Image 1 (cartoon, rainbow, N blue to C red):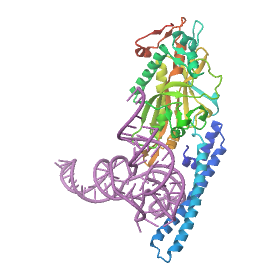
Image 2 (tube, protein in one colour):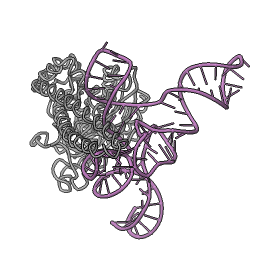
Image 3 (cartoon, rainbow, N blue to C red):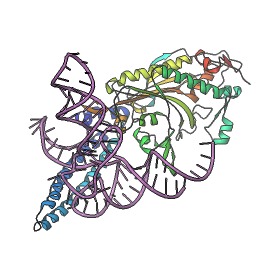
Image 4 (tube, protein in one colour):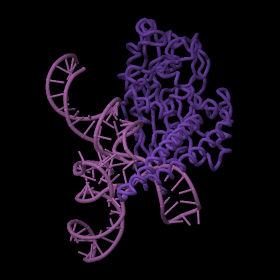
Length: 418
RNA sequence: GGAGGGCUCGCAUAGUGGUCGAGUGCGGCGGUCUUGAAAACCGCUAGGGGUGCAAGCUCCUCAAGGGUUCGAAUCCCUUGCCCUCCGCCA
């Protein structure tokens, strides 16, 4: 939720943000109107409540003769209060709806426009070339006995896969490497629940535009998380944080319905319904948010560099940001089989938007105020394995293990086909 | 799955229809005293909303939501969470 104070003081800034995102700036005026209507309703109801309280008190001290008259008046006021409160509730619900309709205000410098309007900030490493016909990760992975999509489909349906042998070991190695890096940098490792209650899902903003992406267990009214950002953000919901920053690295499975992506990335394990991920999450003072964002991005770059993967960093355009994000950087690694860049990690600065909704505050000079939250992928395991296999493949179908990963694979330097 | 018990101001508790947004203890903060510290003593110690330049005034919040009543922390209903016992599974 955006800051209503900012909205009142500088509605043009919010309108500009809407325009940059390709969203309707008229929603801003709808919100302003709803805000005013609510305040009017609150004032009316407050006045009546105050009067009612006074008359109710008077009932006690009234003499037997005046009592019936006072009681009469109290009853009338009681009814009036009830009506005013109903109006207030209505106005509050309308405000909430209008409030939720507006995504976070984008930061200065975010490129306006849609998915293709991103700006490339830098490229790390050269696009590799091969003196043999490259194979895609599924061919290589199948050859290594590392990936089994056929049985994945048999057991669970399309977009599911088994990681077997080296595939399973690679996952554990990647996760261990990521967690080790996170711990070294002061992040608290967390194993988070993958099932969460509606409030957690809602509070993190995933039931808005992303609602179709989310698995829901209707019988139990629980949701399967699409990223551990959800439990990590909800972790401190409703709390006053005495110490900032707080940094967590959550490891969990992630579930995505991939509704509307039929036919996209259907081969292999680039886009599946279930994968594991190590996700960074930080709670910081809003003044430090941009600095922290750079820090998370740096963590991602180090990790990809350790895997010896060439990648580029893009500044995602306003229209392609999530509801909660004010700015987002993606790291895209080179995918040799398709000769294109593929998003491997992503880090978002949600400023105080998410924290406001989740009620996460800290003590400042002028009382309590929402903190800033940021999230970033350290390692999305499935995709990372896919890219790793492709980039480090050799002509004979074997795969070179990057140096940093070897300690986590019992010193293994090369994975050989079976 | 069955049977009970609970949820109050950071923590522990008091409070069973009206001056209770709420007492006490602990903790925390500030002060007096002290060479310093401790002890003792004194004071302060929720959050949110409305209105106002401000001081202030005012409303809401005793797990959440509904209900009864002129009036609810207190009575009723629903939900959530926690705990105990039994059963079951690991």
